[in-house]
Length: 292
Image 1: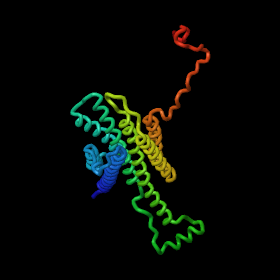
Image 2: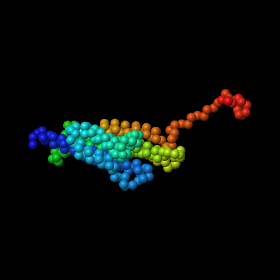
Image 3: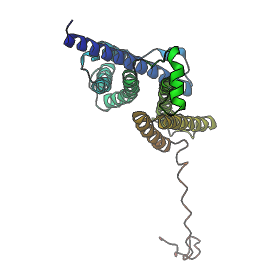
Image 4: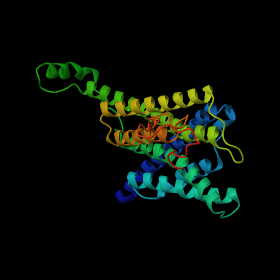
């Protein structure tokens, strides 16, 4: 095998590992998110863990086709997100039965948001996986004393300690991704919960119950807590991409909590009553009432 063929095989293997992690994390994240949302809406069922067809199609495309995209891990990550958006639009058209104006746009938009977020989280996990060191630096037992002496005299750092630090950092990345999955799922639960409270076709929607108000408060609070924890862990471990991702989703969650508030107007103070001190007392028969 020539050097070029060996390099190409190595690049394909690396891309294949990234694609597998991307598809697997996206698939698991979508299942966990669906389980959280359905549980909050009162429809908790293990059947929620069964992925939707568009999620399975996306994962298959990522694992089987995207390793051929190229050597760049960033290119593969972008291709995974783009594939999610295209598959979401295509499956929405198939589900509706053809172009149907606003209906297909709404379904396609919702599928694109949910599957797109799962694809982003999977892509982040795939990039982290292929960019981590291939193996930790191990120090032979016979050489540990020399390393320790060198470290004690200021001659260097212990590679074993550096390897332990790297292992700790690698364990933090899954924790950050898990917090992001929970936070994003709760983020999507906010509009779903609001829709369930206020959607009504023929009659005016009833005021929200105490349980519905409590569900909104718990959903918003837990979403903000999970995303704030993800951002804090990313800051401590200096994960630039995860810091930006966590911050963006956290800001979007604050906006969603305000827009989809239950009950409506809870964050908007009632206007002060208007007092007209300059108008005479009106009894309705004197003809001097303001406005006639």
